[in-house]
Length: 264
Image 1 (cartoon, helix red, strand yellow):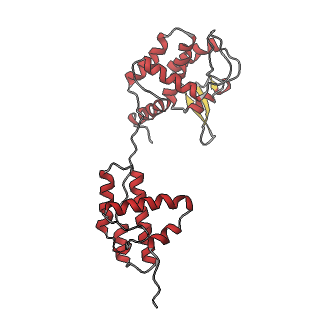
Image 2 (image 1 turned 120 degrees about the vertical axis):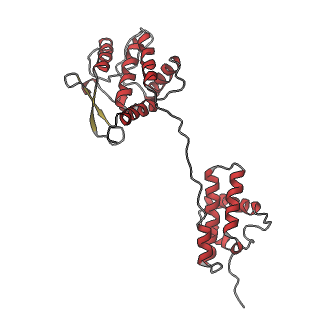
């Protein structure tokens, strides 16, 4: 008596971890529904599936507005079943190749950020300058440094007084990703803003950019990354620039280098 071969969907699903098995079964069931197939996942003759069927599944999922990840997972589930069908001897290599040739959807994430134009940078700094408070002086220096060095928030909060070399006109910064040090040159205009801030902060060792209390007292500890985010966001809002994030200032710095034809 000829032994009946197992259903390729059963073989495929059993090869998965229990946590992934249920979701993939649901995707396979949905794929069959899109093809107007009423059989259960474990009963359908998957060896009859064609290249056109897989294209149909892909297009109908797109028409339904499914997420790119959902479409690609559905295609992967069907390919997994067809791979099992091939190993079971239910389909030939050319049929499997046709199935596998159906391309995944390309995921193109929308960029939520932007780089600022020169006039926007000026408006951002001028908004701080017009604020004659202690925080206005600090923020003018802080944002100027961020715009002209492209530093990350963690790198900004990690700068100490000892990292500021006034003779060489540069900041020594520890990269938050590689933990290596690099020197960032400071222009004359930025240095003026830094010195104005240091007249208030003082030259005591500690974090270069610090929190300021309501009584205008400077607390000699680093700004938190959230505080830096809030400073950028609020100053940009008041300047009429809309939503601006610290990473947008980093984008602005990189864009300015590219515009100046600096080697990437």
